[in-house]
Image (cartoon, rainbow, N blue to C red):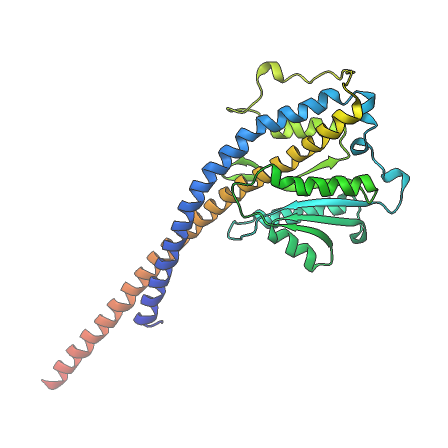
Length: 311
């Protein structure tokens, strides 16, 4: 049986831990609300931008653009780029491990070799994990700031475009945690290069929630008909401006979803830790009382026995 002093120290330790996790829960709750609002409000913007490309996807000039061509069938040594979006910090439950498992599942599904993969890591956790296992992690970017802007994501977008244009990569996949609700986040993989009508349709469908404030209006649910457009001043000028920005929207939106998921998962994890610390503290308090009562009973018995022996 542990001594009263050791039990008391453990109780104090659990109470201090509960105080810290409760404070972290409160901070994460505030950040979660801001992150959720930003991610959800950005869905309409992302869906509208991608819908523009969906409408133009049937135009012959668009189909010939380098970002919409799959160069893998023409070259056997072409590589695949994977953009991994994780957090820089832990204490968020299975958030990062879920992304890592999703990346590994996609590698197996696509039957990719380690030598044919280049990675861009947004967030330290994913970058360190795959770099330590020998993957070619070309770029590492921090994912600490909650106020990340679309402009900051253009470094990633420009790198993906440069690799695809030069023929080094044939496709690019982004893998991140898609925000469903406060208690549910879903690891999601989306192809962002080459941009095809099917890929854009899947992106738009995945961005807009089925119900709620940001759900599509009834007149928006029907799919857009593919129409041939006349592009002015010319297709190359317009597409050189439009496609990189739409690609950047897709990457930026994935980072917003990941950030909202991170704060939600951390708040839930810290609440669970706080509740567990409180439960352990209460259990140890009961144990402390039992041990103290047993010690008092034993002392009383000894005193009584001593008195009886003196008679």
